[in-house]
Structure formats: structure tokens, C-alpha cells
Length: 306
Ligand code: NDP
Image 1: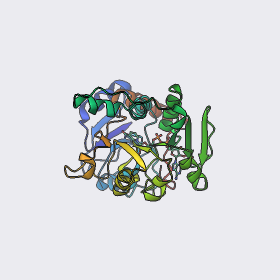
Image 2: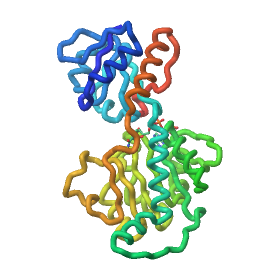
Image 3: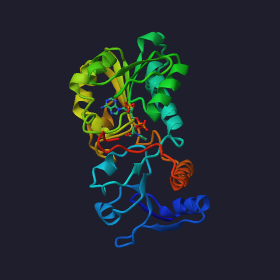
Image 4: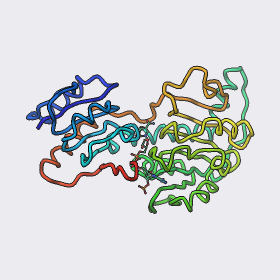
């Protein structure tokens, strides 16, 4: 089995070592233009030339959960694309989102800035039932986040493309139930894939439908959010603030208005990192399953964009 590795922003050595340990018989290489056809590929942000030259792959493994970057390329027809499913990302996402929700709900950001100014002030405790959290996207990550939020006893709503049942979560689905989902939510967590249907989905119209004092947590992709609409909604007082991990341009430009906004908390696309060991174990298990002719999970459907 020939496996090629084509990841533009990752050092290949440790990945190849891990693959060699998991699949001792495999022939491994780091892709170079003009290389012979491989059987399988591990990819992250590969160039178009890779796709054009490796059109005979039996499958391609994307080293992340989101495939929006990959689907921007012209993919060779008929090559299955497999994405990472969880592999240690869901628990990271759950801890990140829960800390952001709790930090806002408990006014920890306000206490922090009070303390920095030498102030010692108590604020009235907030009421949990007044902070329903809406999770957009009830896939691998969204489900784990919705489940984790329930441990803190927040009311949780969820929205997906197709109807989903999740214990303890009030679920909504499809475009026709989107407004009802937004109206029932005060804190909004975005965990959608970036597709033609979801680009710019957090905009003036949709953000204004959130309950007053709303809060936005974007951990999916920067292009889901219309930046200036978020700022306008915060500055008008309709929204209380936002925690943002992903941006239209990354790194976030030094002069972007988010950088200095007092109600916006930023992190550098770090809410759920691809973990090498867990991801390699998952990919190796899937390669073995493929070899046995077993069906795979995590297959991307190009027509729906995720
Ligand atoms: P999944 O594919 O498992 O889940 C996607 C969910 O979104 C599904 O519930 C799906 O609905 C729903 N969805 C898709 N399109 C629509 C739509 N048009 N309307 C309503 N719901 C829709 O993905 P993951 O949970 O694994 O990952 C989600 C995203 O998180 C990734 O695509 C990526 O962009 C982002 N991410 C960010 C990271 C970070 O560090 N910031 C790290 C990892 C991922 P249905 O259930 O009906 O299919």
C-alpha cells in the first residue's frame, strides 16, 4: 500500500513515523510534484497540482474535521474524501465552548477587568434559565458540546439540516425552523461546516433574532460570520459580546476591529486542534477497514459540502 502525505502547514516527520508504526507494511512518502500514483493520501490544504496528478487515489484522508478548504479545489472524480471524526477534538471543543459560556454567564470577564482596575464589586447572580444556549450544527462536535452544556444545567437548543433527537436538547432543523431556533436562544454557538448554504449565516438579520443580551461563540469558520454585522449588533446593545476562535483572514489582521473591541474575546483558531496520535489511529483503522472491504464513516458528500 502506497501512502503519500501532502500537508502544507505540518511537519511530515512525526506523522510518517506514526503511520509507519501503525501500518508497518505501508510504503510512505512526502508528496513531490511528478511523484508516481499513490493508493492513499493524507492531506491538509494541498495544492491543485496534487489533485491533478493523484487522480487515481483509492481514498484521501483530510487531517481535520472541516473540508471547506479541500472542497474549494477541483477534486479528482470518484475519489472518496474521508474527514477526521472527533479523534480528541470533541472534548476540546466542549471544554472551549463551556468555558466561553460560563465565563460570560458568570461575568468572569467583567470581574477580571474590575480586578485589573483595582475594583472589588459583586454583581447580582444571573439566572441560568435566562441563558438558553443554541448550538448550530449537531454533528460530531455539536452533539458533544450540547451534551457538555447540560452538565452546567443551561437550557440547550440545537439546530441541524436534518431532524435530530438528542436527550435533553430542544432540536430544530432546516431553514424553516431556523428563526424559531434563534428566537429561543440567547447564547449562540456555531459548529456548522462552511458550505454555500452556511456562508455568511451569522449576519444582521439572523443575529438580531437572538434574544436581547445575546452572545455569539464562533468556533466553526470565519466566513460564517459577517464581521461588521456582529460589531454593529454589539455596539447597538442587542448583543452583549462574542468569543471568536475563527476568522475570515487568519492570522486576524493587526488592524481588524475585533482586535481592540472591548466586548470581543479572541483566540487564534485553537478551540479544537487535530491531535496527531488520535488522528493517525483513526486513519490507520480506516485503512485496515478499507482493505477488508468494510464500509467507512466520515465520508464527505461533495454535493452537500460536508
Ligand atoms: P459534522 O459534519 O459532524 O456536523 C455538521 C453538522 O452541521 C450536522 O449536524 C449538519 O446537519 C449540520 N449542518 C450542515 N449544514 C447545515 C445547514 N445548511 N443547516 C443546518 N445544519 C447544517 O461536523 P463536525 O461536528 O465534525 O464539525 C463541524 C465544523 O466545526 C467543521 O466543519 C469545522 O468547520 C469546525 N471545526 C472547527 C475547529 C476549530 O478548531 N475551530 C476544529 C474542528 C472543526 P445534519 O446532522 O443534518 O447532517
